[in-house]
Image (cartoon, rainbow, N blue to C red; front, side, top):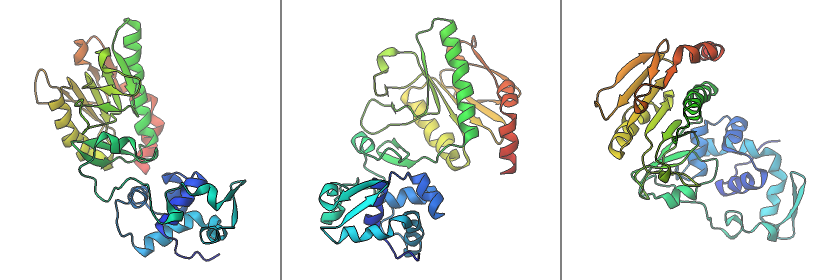
Length: 295
C-alpha cells in the first residue's frame, strides 16, 4: 500500500500506542537513529518531506487507523487492543492540536528537570545546561565495559571495600547542581554519601569511557575537561579500534599515560593494588574484535 505523508504529530501518536522504540523506527524506515531521535524530539524544527515520508514507512500498518484522528466515533484496533478517541486524548495532545512533548527545538538552557522529562528511549547527556546526543553503544562496546566493571567489582568484594562500581546507564549528577547529568560507561564511587537511590550525586573517584567513533570528541575533550574540573580523581579512555587505553590520574598529573590492549593497567585510586589485564579482555572478546574489523 502506498504510504501518504504522515505528520510528525501523527507519528508521535502511533509511536506511543504501538510501543515502537527509536531503534525500531530507524530499522523500519531506513532513517539513521540519530535523525529519528532529533525529529521525534523536535530538535529538527522542519524535517524534510523526504525524511517524513521515510519515517512514515515505520507506521505503514497503521494506515487504516488514520481515520481515527478525524472521526470521533471511530474505534481503532491496534496491537490487539480497541481504542476509542476519547480514551487517548492524553497522548501528546495530538487530538486537541497541541503537544505535551518536551521542547527540544534547542539543546541549550536545559536543566535536570528537562533531562528527567525526556522519553526513556532518548539518549542524551546534560553538561553545563546543554544536551548532547549519545549514540547507542555497540555490542563490543558493552562487553568491554562489562569486563572492566567485573574486574573492579570483584576487587572491591574480595577486599571488603566500601567503594561501589557501577555501569551505564547510571545517572551522575556531577556538579551537585541542576545543569549536569552524565552516564559514564563504568564508574567507581568510594564516598557512599554520594550514592542515592536514583543516582550518584557528586564526582565519582574513577570514570572509564569506552570510545565510539561517534563520541570521540565528547569523551576525549569535553567530558575529560568536565571530569577533571568536577573532582573526578582518575579517568580512563578505552579506544577499541586503536587498541589503546589513555589513563589520566589528575591528582598526579594532567598528562595521561598511554597503554595498549597487551598491558596490565594499575588502578591509581587504589595505589595499583587492583589491576585490569587488557590482554585477557582482548582474548576473551577476540571474536567481537574480528567482527568489528570487518564492519
